[in-house]
Image (cartoon, rainbow, N blue to C red):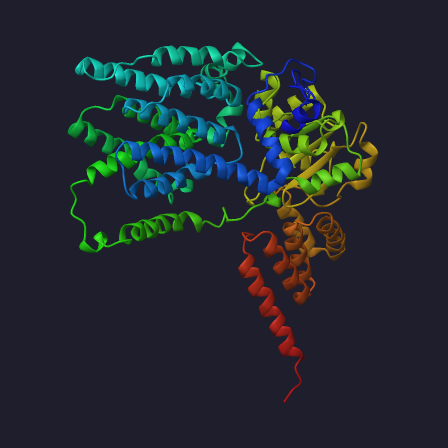
Length: 562
């Protein structure tokens, strides 16, 4: 979308992104973020996006570190806390509008905290922050929550101690910020979005199935210290309340951010950011009277200990194989080879796709109207479209109803990873109206056998190979007992393996066929290639050992008699 805005020097006001609602009025959320992101990509591609992540993350945590220092957390302790909370923030640091919001939230907290502690910082800065926030992301309500938390704190302090600083112009600054938010291309629609989501959209089946809108997945967060952070932050806040009096701003912000994070993973990053300055301050306050070993008093000892602590707490998270360190894209995460096939073979018409692939289809083919996705990541479409789409992945009746209404010409589906997974892809395998024409580790492409793609479907269809798992057991049994069927399937697997550089599953199946024919050297070679592409391939190690054992047995049998 950023590329389109820069190319056309205009903000799209109609839907040019999905084919069912093409030309209808379109609300474009986060338009400012998209416009800002495009120059980073244009300048450095993957490295440009990495630079965006580095700049926004380091900028946000630098502001939060400075806030903690101003609050009394001196020394190296705030740095250790920043590393800890950054581990939680890490999973929400994808290149998306939240990264810009992190910078805005950190700046607002720094500004209000500095002002509360007597700093000469004018609250008028809140007005441009509010404007940027409303034009960058629909989470603008967090701006008001943060400002109101500090306003309530100022009122309570003033009531308890008449000598305390008055709220001053803060209420006016918040009202001015709210007015500035209306200065956006979509007016009141922008401010209505969070409420519309909370009261309406989140109850729709399509939204209930989105992982990031679900409660915390502890299998993902067991190594980054999230559980301890959720306990330590409010506990230390309560202990500080007992020693120094209530900090209402801290308590309100923690209550809101923890409540959001527990109910929706989407807000884990917000919680990590909010917790950072207060946790560092409260922890430093709690440890102020502690007795430390004498060696920590030596020059350089505390920085060295802090560095060691930072390394140690990150090791469990950095050792995760599914999130390797590096700059670039995971090829298996995108249907790139399937889109190459679509482009090379002239596939056009009414597409069906997973909404997570809508952005990639647009990236590859926009503005070609013949290759627009059915749905994008913002779940565009009518309410009926969204409900049938959500049900279609597990309910063949819903798929048939959606297909009958929209009459799709081609369907791009993600292939299930686990052998036990079944769903829409198995429905299309069993439907004679659809033909599998391409499949690799990332995606499977189906064409309708009737309509504008009928000739291509007839020429390119796989006669034996399915895209899903349901028919795979029957195929394996037939191949094992019938050498003629085995030869036909081998030819199709060879074609499938050659159609994409990432086709470990096809190589794995080819290895099984080579094993049935006693070609163990070839089987072992194919398994090794498959393992490099799909390291978590089921029973990979056992199958390699079996092939190696058969190969050694063959070589032993051929050895000359002594």
